Structure formats: structure tokens, C-alpha cells
Image 1: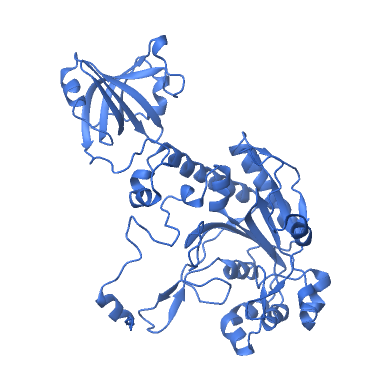
Image 2: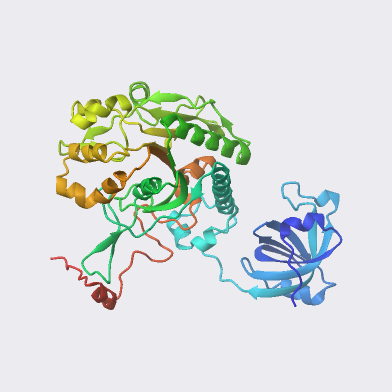
Length: 467
């Protein structure tokens, strides 16, 4: 039976005791008679020393190399005061090596995993992501992301929300971005779509009487190359029944404030409660609907949140027709409902949309929804959809709303963007465990890739050859 493993972070509490630790060789320094090895695990790092008096361990210590995985038994000693490293959590102790077991050797790493990684080309980092993730900066990012998500779950659970998973194989509908489509083998010639968001499902959950729903949701959008976008990303998605705009905004503002104060106490929120700007004010004053209102843009720990409200419901598309500015399922403000139903003064219709902005980045957006089928139908008519198209694409929603759906509203946060800003990172790829390039390639898995002809045959698909 192998000895019980001790995590490195616990060593400073175990001076004088013999322990077994396991992890990766961070660095080895050979001074002849004395060999020093820094070993790290998920909890931290410690300096170890191999002495000639422990001959077998000393000999093996001379053979290990960076990134080898080893198990070490040894005695935890207090360092002499003049050798204490105050910059390290375990800088007051070191482990006197009594024995070493090599659990796995490692090739020479193609990238340095001990630096912050910013000096390394991103393509190399993404190709060897399992190595890249070993670096302390990314370990911190991913672990803090977990803490944020856990905090959200605990907060919403206490508020009476239910976490509900919604399907990843769904129907392709015109919601704005291009869908990823998935061919059906059983129903050849027909396709599923991966969800751009759980928008329709969360509204159907309100029709189902769930009243308070949330999900840490994976979303998929087949968009053209855009620097800081990923083809798949994560949202905090939530919806509430029997609410007005103010209630949804208040709950989300409280959650955002609590996350910062609890998990990032070193950061300062510029203004509480969050300031509010109408879309018109934001555009006239800042020329942007997501302005950066920080009073000191050189302060990395200053967080300037604001709400932007009173958006136009519709805008002209590049063909001269009408399209929605945010979401076709939004409800107009009450005083503008008659305009919508009559399809009059379309440019003047304001929606109940609310966006939350942080340091010039939109991190969330939502609205009160159209819960009455006729109002939703008018939205699609204004956008030029024919009756048969509306029925084919959204008939399930219209039917559901005709069966006693309550008023409801919600929001979705861009979780990747929010974590990026809290961690002072330059892009979302630094807070996503297995990120893709800006043009959607997974360099580590070599995806997208070709598939076997037999797979295509099963699906009834032929690849058209370029002429």
C-alpha cells in the first residue's frame, strides 16, 4: 500500500514530519554534493534537497529532468533564517529527500511552462495546450474561473433558481448568427443545429412554470474570423417569471457586486449603484453603446460597471429592411407596444433591452420578453418574414405562448469576457482551458479535420469538388 500523499501547500504545517509528495519537476539545480529540485503540484511548489547521505535518492535525483512526474518521500525541515524565501508560500521550509520514485518521464518541453507565457507565440501555446496550462498564470485563471462559477451557482440557488440543462442538438432558426449544423444519420437530408444560446428553451421553461431558471451554458456560433471570438463559448443564462426590468437588473447587479467583493477584494468598483445611460445618451456622449467610463484607465483594479437601456428595437439591415438590434424575442416598452402591433413608427419603438457594461466591454445583455404570441408574430412580420416562414421557424414558440405563458425576462452574461476582465488578461483565450485560434482551429486536436468516406456515406453527404 502506497503512503498517503500530502499536498505541497500543507508542508509548512508539517515541520519535522516525514511525508510523501507527488508532482512535476519544476527545475533541478545540481551543485555536486547537493542537488536541489523544485517540485510542484496543483496546490503549490516546494524546494527539495538531495544529500549524499541518502545515496540511492541522491543518485536518482541527479537523473530527473524538468516535467518528469515523481513521488518523493522526505522530511520537512525548517530553513535557516538567512535562506528563507519570503516570496514563496513554502519559502520557510524545504524537503529533505529520503527516496524518489519516477512515475513518468517527460520529453524536453517544446515550450517553457514556468514563465507567464506571454513571450511565446500563441500557436505554439495552443498546440501544446496541456503543457501551456501547467504555467502558474493559467492555473490561476482556470481555478478562479471555477470559483466564479461556483459562487454564481450558490448565489442563485439561495435565490430559488433551478439549474436546468437544455439540448445541444436543436433546430436551426434565424436568430442572428450562422448556425453550426449537424447532419442526422437516421433522418438523412435533415439537420440539427447547435444552439447559439438557450434563448428559446429558457422561455419555454417559463411556459412550463419553472419560474426561475439558470444554466452555465455552452453556446455555438459559426461566425467569420473575429479576433476575440470563439466558435464555442460559455454564458451564464438565466430567466425569471412575473418580473419587470428593474427586478432582473437589481438581481444581476447584486450578484456582480458580491462576486467582486468576495473573490476580488483588491478591486474597486467605481460607482455604486451602477450608473445608467440610455442608448441615446451613450451614443451622443461617448459614440458607443458600451462606453468605458473609468475615471482612471491606467488603474488595472478599477471596475467601472454601467447599465445601458432604452435601445431601439429595430434597425435597418444592409438590404434596407428591418432587423432586431439585440433579440427578436424582446418585448417593447409598454408605451411602445401599440406601435409594434400596428407596425407604425418602427424606428421609434424602444425595447426593454438592458446591457451591463464593464470597462468598455459588454459583459451581459437581456430583456423582458414578448410572452404574447401576437406581439412576437408582429416582430417577425416587421422583419419581412412570410407567414409560412414564421410558422415553420417559430411555430413552436407561438403555440407555447398561446398556452398561458407568464410575463418573463432574463439575461445572459458572457462568462469568458467577464473572467478575462477580472483577471486583467488581454483576451478570452487566456481564461478558456482548451481555446481555439481566432479562425476557429483547434491546433492541439487538429480540428476541424476530414472524416472517413464511410462516415459521409452513412450520412448521405457528398463533398462538392471545387471546379
